[in-house]
Image 1: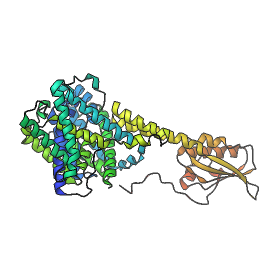
Image 2: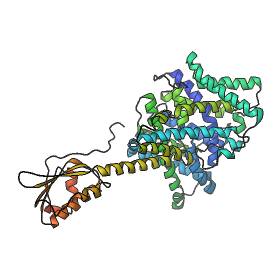
Image 3: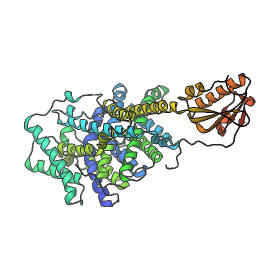
Image 4: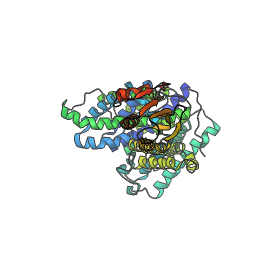
Length: 522
């Protein structure tokens, strides 16, 4: 229905104009996330500027937009409520240090362990969250407009006091007009990003027609000065560290998961490859700096990243431009930006929702294994009702358990005898914690000849549980007085078979090498 594709080529004009579009969309979200976290609007705007600028300049994914997010805000609110905003700034600094460490130790590669159904669930769930968050703007009060928390933890649709009468109809019409311009303008010209054109056109219509509708200034004032450096005013004690470290660890984890998943999504859209570990370090530096300049911290924003990419933003300049435009709004143009209708920004975000949601998942859900379909739906639901980090962790755990359960059945042992009268057991299938019970049950040490050979040429030993199972089996045969030969074990398997010691003859014909994960692409 909607054409959201954009050129893969980078250009200065596209980057600057898409950056302006993103900056306009960042304003109400940064303010709303600040409300959710329980801090002043400028704390959210400073975070959007600083995190956005630093990650755009140094991050591993050009074109990706970072700033204050709802996933982090819902964690911050309890810290601010209990200890105050200065403890939040200290937490953001520590959060950044943890993220830098994650990048230095190359932990970003583990995002490759996220299964595709989890990715689909993440994208669909986040699209639903973005959609539901915009519904709060149809409320009658600023509190309703601040219902932008990334989950249902702080409210519900039924709690909104909906607009009534002409005010509601006016907003709906403006939203539809915005969406229509974004959809149809690219068919006529691509000289200007359609989202930016829609925001400008609807804003001018509201101003010159004197329409009664909510504008950005009705939500909060965005006027302010340059952020200033200040060390967080907290006691430098172990007690302070005990307070902020759990929050910092959770925030760092959520921030990296959301950033790396967004990086992967932008990679797929642009058919390019970002650098996860570099992005981890960049996010960490950005948050560390932000904590010292009075910002609430942040991470990658899928909605704004989609706006940027679909508006033609491909290079680092797009993110840098968005951050500088946002700063200029705060310093010089707050009175103009505050006149932008909220409806125009809602329309932009609705287009983002349509483009973000994987509509193909409805078509494939009956074609993929039931377990994958279940994981997709589960992750989507958990994303909506809790937060992204919990959803991804749950999805990965469920996928891993399903994988383990299915592959636990795939270990088979075939018995043969060779020309020398030895009993040979050919092991076929992976040997790991889930399959060891099935593996051991297929051996009867009281049967067979006195000379036994267990051949692992068609088996892979995946973990220490598998090694322990081999060691247990070796001891059983030795206790019956039989001679046991273990063939085709890898070097690490032989080194770890300590219990059997010199009593077990290990005849290695070849030395397989197992590699689970590498960092060659990062």
